[in-house]
Image 1: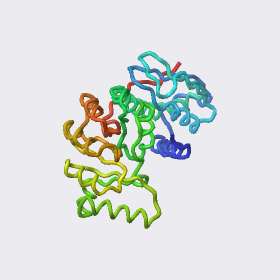
Image 2 (image 1 turned 30 degrees about the horizontal axis):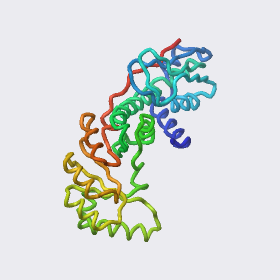
Image 3 (image 1 turned 90 degrees about the horizontal axis):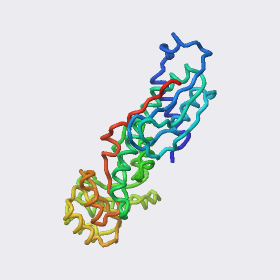
Image 4 (image 1 turned 90 degrees about the vertical axis):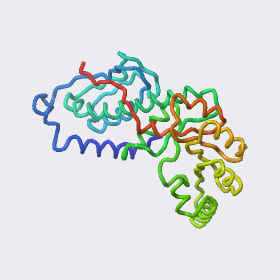
Length: 281
């Protein structure tokens, strides 16, 4: 879940970027005391995400704004539905408008895409997970959107899980050396981080299984046949993750191989935002 402190810091930084020394468009033509309402109007089908962020943003801009929620985050929505109504100072509503829409449209796009993938494998054990391919400064929001869409988060950053990818392995001097050095490092530092390692071939899978010392094997850019073979070799001794170029058209085939996870970078870096607007009432 999102930490309130991190969310508030993000909102304050975003407002600083947008407001500068004031919203002069509103200040020029909207009297300070004017009050009104605006509704968040859904304009296309999708999965709603970001209402919690919007509510906090309104609170930060103006604690006097009222917020009435009609649709919860994670709910499928259709054109014409109203997600919430905000009421109070017209100047404050106008200050909030673009930032609220930028966040909610993007988060809802991520949640919608994630739900499409998750629905295709919902009867199987495989979980759809995200990656670190996120917008700098917005990772916590984008990963929250993945959860709201029915997916799961991989690691949040470089600090909460070990992932030995191709470059780590090559720089370290090979699979076995990379794993041993990592195990030694974790013992030395007194850290209990899980270890994932990338396999680029069936031979890599065999070497990793023989050496051990890890928690999860990533099958990177394996086709379906190779994935089936790898899962058979691993035989439940380690978690398995398929990754690399998997699409809505192929995700089911990879999940049917029996992998535990399928990671999809496109969830957070190939985004089509969901159309919505904040309309005066």
